[in-house]
Length: 173
Image (cartoon, rainbow, N blue to C red; front, top):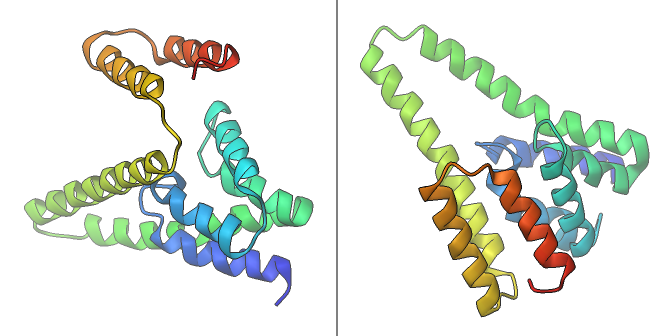
């Protein structure tokens, strides 16, 4: 199977499970693109994810960059379309189904369940990524302090991101 066809098929299948967006299944995307298919290496994956997080717009930019790395401009287009089309069709039909429901209570229950599923998958993804990192006590401390600041103050997160960048440049974390 050609590289571009494999890219399109694998990412289309991935998209069906990516409820809550690409970030919700980041470890699975890593497994596919780094370990199974070797489209990119682990460091490139981390770099692409960082670029996607820093850039405005949706997180699917990670997938676009993986496709670009694997197959150039055509790979980027195919990867982006592959991640968008299956989930878009599912959401379209699910929304139509919800809007036609007569029982509003059931409709609200399904909506809350879907939101809970998306949040749960995103948290599970964050957990899977965090347990693979080589963390030191300083990194744990920085994480705990960051969580405390976010939960107890109205400080804009960009300040914390900038502080993290400075600590990284100084090789503290």
